[in-house]
Structure formats: structure tokens, C-alpha cells
Amino acid sequence: MSHERRHFTRVHFDAPALLKLDHSSLRVHILDLSLKGALVALPPGHGLESGTLCQLQLTLAPSNVHITMAVEVARHEEHQTGLRCLHMDLDSITHLRRLIEWQLGDAALLDRDLSQLVAGAKRVGYDD
Image 1 (spheres, rainbow, N blue to C red):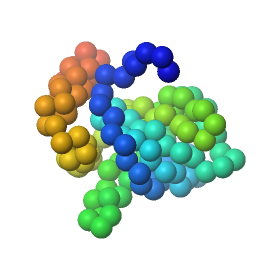
Image 2: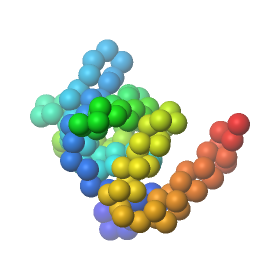
Image 3: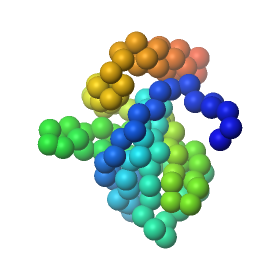
Image 4: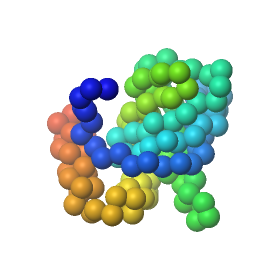
């Protein structure tokens, strides 16, 4: 990609996760994370269409903390799939924020991302 369009800081993250579809689940591998989604590696022989709705579940070992996000397939190239986060519960957002902050070592970058996330939610009517 020649020009960066992302507005959220991504961090490299190497962990297994579960991608739940309507009637099945796939064991995937997370390659990177942000407050707005994830890049995952799919098992060989699997592909997902753009626009597919699913749920990404990540368990942080050894703490057994869970991060769950409702996602939409944004793109799929070979064995890598970009997932756009549509919704996360408060506990998942809190855990993901701490994880990204720890990986970045820079709380200011994450605070900027959170401000953009809240501003975006208000623009589309999620300010209740």
C-alpha cells in the first residue's frame, strides 16, 4: 500500500483467536490489533468475503482475560484478512486499550485514537 489511510495506531500482536461466523468458527492467528480492528491469518483453504459479519474472540493468557469484538471483513488477501471493528463491550475496550498502551509505551498516541473513536461514534449517532 503506497499511502497510509489508517487513522488508528496498530500494534503487532502474535496470538491465536477464534473467529465466529453464523454457523461455524475458525481458529485464526492475530497479526496486529487496533481499536478499530485486526489483521488475522486464516487457516489454509479458508477465505471470507468482504462484508461478512462475525465475532473475534481473543483470550489473553495466562490471565484468562477476554477481548470480544463484533467485526466485519474489510478485505481478504490470500491468507490474511482485515477485520473492521463494529462494536465492543466496555470490558473488551478497557482490556484492549491497556494491551495497546503496553505495546506502544505511549499513552498519548492511544488517547488520540480514543478521541477519534469517540468523535466518530458521535458523528454516526452513538453518543447516548
